[in-house]
Length: 62
Image (cartoon, rainbow, N blue to C red; front, side, top):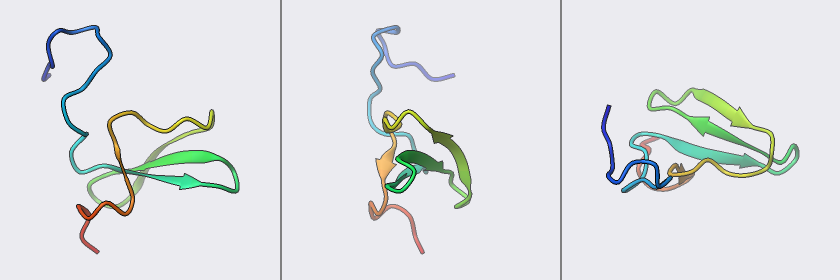
């Protein structure tokens, strides 16, 4: 597993590769999309995922 020293400081250098996040304003949830385009995970507390780029960000090819 890769580390970004110093560990434990709750920081990441750069964004998570090949992942994006989408906000659903109706349900106020954030959903994470993986490299294959399928939805991976959702957050119901209304806070976005850390270190994941928002869509559309120009990295994902359609």
